[in-house]
Image (tube, rainbow, N blue to C red; front, side):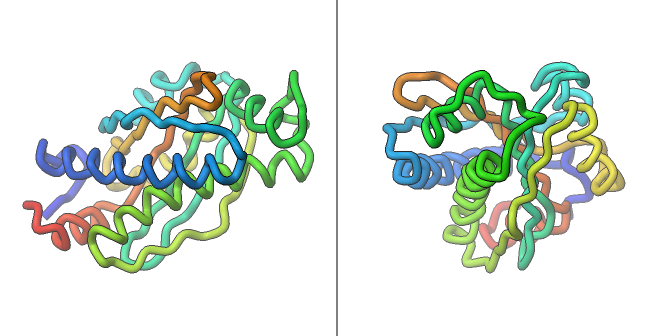
Length: 205
């Protein structure tokens, strides 16, 4: 029985990576359809990182960043946290609205709605891959958007999930949109009990 993320073995991590590969394919197709551009998503890198390591992996605590938070419901509980830097947001908002030189703290409702939907597609694609493989019923709540310093954004999973350990599951993806390379950092933060349910369904000890 898993008690914390650090207990994950190599086989279990490989399963999560494979699910990530399937989810990336789903996300690529959905995103391409949404924005009308050719999209390639490099196979994701799945890592178990401490909260401070996760911050360091994405910059410094003072860096301004946008984040999409999606809470999970059903058989898998937890949250997905997608970090979107200014460069990523700028490419998306330029495609939709022809905007450039954006300020993450001064986005209007249309900007926030577009970025939230991008996050929703990416997070839902990953969870859909898990649901398809396992037969589990997994739902996602409506995404919520925030723009703040990275340290403040990362305090949310720390507060909610710190009791299960100081580690989380980070899924880094490299996305190519019309030849422009962008980094996307998604954190899948299921409860440890949910991971046990997942691996039990897949027969992975």
